[in-house]
Image (cartoon, rainbow, N blue to C red; front, top):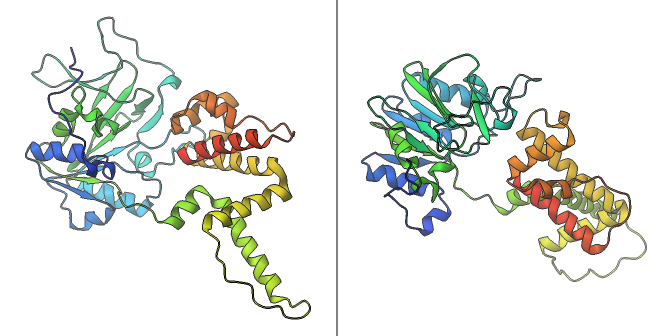
Length: 360
């Protein structure tokens, strides 16, 4: 019987707000392992392959092919590389978009889409928990991976793997002198999940007798990066308005006027003015459609082949990617009726779309 709470637990610390894996670092240090945290792959230049484990726990969508080559060469030389699968396999394009996952020839898909889902075992009292079996151990270790995702090994390259009653959630490959470990998710090593079942034990077991480097970016983006990430249309509109103003200011009409007071507007006022301009000249539909198109563009980047799915299947994928209810997705992406919405309804619809977009 799995233990729902392990003896080891984490006390909430202020540092945990900036470092989601602080609990994991503390646990490994308590077990006598050498642990360091890195923000970028620059650490590879000074990280020997032999005797080291590198855990890629952050977002990797910007990883380049040369960086993938560098990582796999490091593993081939004797390093232990662990990473989380970030994208779903697309049969039409024969790739997932996750460069590292595609290079090791492991596919990820939704558990609900399995052609041959595993038959539930009659004596399995915990089908949603992943079982890790060891030699000379009668009972398995229990791990609480997310059961929504499944890892497939079409080339039969796996040295070992771990399944729940629903899907496969961990695959280990021999890679040259080293090893590559692929997971469906690493949330099991964030607090408080790391204190549940045997989640913490698995982290220790996978990194026994090695120094551990956890790689994820804790640097917070600056204001302009945040604005470009969440309000790209508003910034483009602002730039166009600024260019129009500069052009108009350069044309002289009539006598010169006294310079206006140098009152400065806040950035929020500029963004609001840009949105008001678009609303007056293009209407509600154009603004809502732009947000919906941006959501679909981000979904295609996270899930290749997204645009080819039926509407309801697209809603299901968006719900998984954004961790929002399907009903909220449906309300946000409902077709535009062409009728003008009230101010309250329009504001609510914009809020739904922005919330969904920011979650992708």
